[in-house]
Structures are given as structure tokens and as C-alpha cells.
Amino acid sequence: MPRGRAGKGGAGGLLILVVFVVISMALGINPLSLLEGSIGTGETYSSRPTDNRPLPNAGQDELFDFVAVNLNETEKLWSLVFEQNDLSYRAPVLVIFSGSTSSPCGTASAQTGPFYCPADEKIYLDLGFYDQLRRQFGAGGDFAQAYVLAHEVGHHIQQLTGVLPEFNQQRRAMSQVEANAYSVRVELQADCYAGVWANYVGEMNLLERGDIAEALNAAEQIGDDAIQMRSQGFVVPKNFNHGTSEQRQRWFERGFSSGNVGQCDTFSAERL
Image 1 (cartoon, helix red, strand yellow):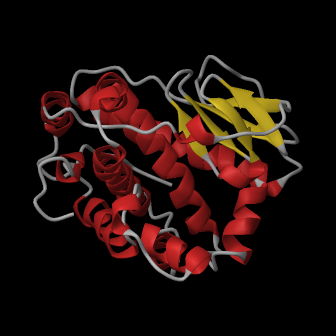
Image 2: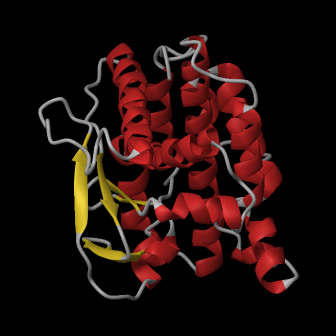
């Protein structure tokens, strides 16, 4: 899906962003801290070139293949961005599981949705989530699925650039409200990074009509306000930790329209 670049005027943008977010005590989140469930087994796919292990049922299961292709395409983009900034990119590992599985961040279940664990630099995904995304959230389509994965890879970028490690050091001194406010900035940056990847995909002429609309619809459906309205009929902004539908759409579009990681600085933005 992409032909990457650091972005218009973006060479060096990643380095600037790394320095800024460390100074600004940028935050990451550990979504598994509140999870409970039984331990299951997960199968691991690595996009790293040194790991030739195929996806489970690769070549037989279209969805497995789709996820593998998307993960490999994110690696192409971020390898290029890091190289342009004289850095070396270390790709994440994708763990595909069914039901539940364990991780250094805790126990993951199918109900949690995809998540990134900074402790082992792995993305955990139950493919059944995509069906849930379509049925419960009304966010179907291939590119809605691609956006979700690209967002989790965005958290891996934050791990490599120091955003998530800094949060792990600083969050002990934060109130829940403060942690929620900063985690919104982290999540919106990951959305922006997903948009940069979508731009990269477009430059490879791999976008189809309606793809970006699918991603924007997914961003709308999984905004904090939309989720709270569906679940409880009202919204509590102080409990937001991912961003509103409008914010998530806007930061994805910002990354997509610019193709520039330097435009994803949510930590100094006055308006989220």
C-alpha cells in the first residue's frame, strides 16, 4: 500500500518530534492494566525480514493475508522515515490470537480489541474484532481494518521515539484526569501517523475509491464521545482517553493530507 517518504518538508521531522515529546513528557497508555480473563494461546507473525515464519493459514485465510500485507507495508514506510532521519527502524511483532492470550502487559481477550504492548513491542489482534467493528460499530471495509492496524503501529513508533517510555516514568505522579488528557494526545498522534501511512499508500496508487472514507468512518465510530453515547447515552469528557470522533478524524486527515510526520505533533497543539 505505500510508497513512503518522510513527507513534504518532513526530513528531520521525526528527530525534532522525538526531542520535543521527551521534553514535553509525552504520554503512552497501557490498555491492559484493567483487563481480566483466562489465558489462551496466540500465534505470532513477525514482519521482520529475519523471521520467515508464515502467518497461520497464510495463503488460505484471506484476512490473515490482508493483515500481513498491511503490516509489511507499514514497515516499508517507517523504515524509510527512520532512514531519512539517520535512525534504524525495528519492526513490531504481530500476535494473532483467538479468545484470549497473555502478554507482559496483562491478559488480552477478544473484547479488548487490538492493542500495542510496549513491554514486548508486540501488537495483539483477535481477527474477530474486525467483524465486531463492522457489526457493532458500523465501520466495515478493508481500509477501516487497515486504519486500525496502522494506528497500533503508530503506538510502536511512539515506543521507539520515547513517547511511551516517558509516560511509564511520569504517570505515577498524575491524576486519572491528567493521564486521560495526555493519553488523548498520544492516541491522536497515532491516528495522525496512520494518516501518514494512508498518504504513503496513495502514492503507491494502492488506494481504492472509498478507502479514506472507510477510515474516517471508523475513526468517527470509535471516538470516545460516540462510544460513550452508544454505551450510556451521555458523554463524560473528563473520561475521554482516545479523543472525540471529530478529533480522531481531523488528525487522521492531517497526516493523510500532509504525508509528514512533523505535522503529527499533538503535544504542542493548542487545539486537539
